[in-house]
Length: 392
Image 1 (spheres, rainbow, N blue to C red):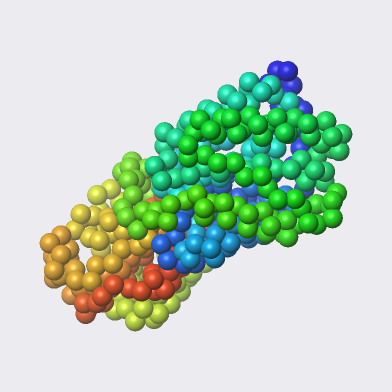
Image 2: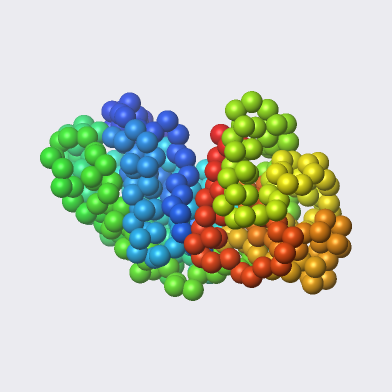
């Protein structure tokens, strides 16, 4: 059966899913905690959140909370979701996306249902999944893992015509076999068959279903991801990617205008009070410089070469960055002498695609020690609020 016919059949099969209740857009989900894991969830069905009105009630939301609970760390879950997305669609989206896949601890693929109901040949199933996994293998970090979610087709009765479900149930077992065969060729990939629903059959998916699936996914990822994942170390992020992300945001005027400006000011003042800081700043990158676009306790508009500020290191560290004595650091000593500031703690500000565009900086005139894990988690929460305020 040709791709056009299978595509048309998939659209028919998912017609009710396209019009079901689901979040307006796939937003990132964040759970507070130290040294956060970053997870990417890609696909349709459970990733798209059918039957839930907010992202917090979907699979990504429940997964993030359960994963934070079992790992004892924070979680940043990015989502690329669309109803009816199959492996070919996922590969196209990821190929055209600028996010750095090497930054993730785990990548979750939820593309199986769309593949099963499309009635592709097993050869095409194999080719599509193999191409997607090969693409990820080339771009993931060595410690990253891939989880392929496998749905139970009876769960689709509320969204896919019952005759379709009856007809493809037998093919689902074959898809599981094919997926297992392909995954075996990719050592960092694993399969997860989602648990059976506990809510009444034939009813739309509910948060209770996503909670059950999110718990199962969290336990699976926790078993797969190495405990010593390098979330505290520097990441390799291309300079071009950072500059494109920064250039895509009207950050400098936004932080001074309207509701966004008021929210940024409120967040900075709260951070200054919480950390008993002498100064707090929101910085963004502009070429080779760092620009203080909004600040409390220090001058705004100051422009400083990136290499002589801690901010250039901060944007490459997903768990934040602390410099107890800037005055004793060979690169930062001139900045400390000029401003009188000695202690620095920072967390990066991210664009919608997860790329860093600037930093939230905490300064004190007196030297200090390392911040506790709880304090770093709180600093991260302030940075996430700034990111949300700027990105919208």
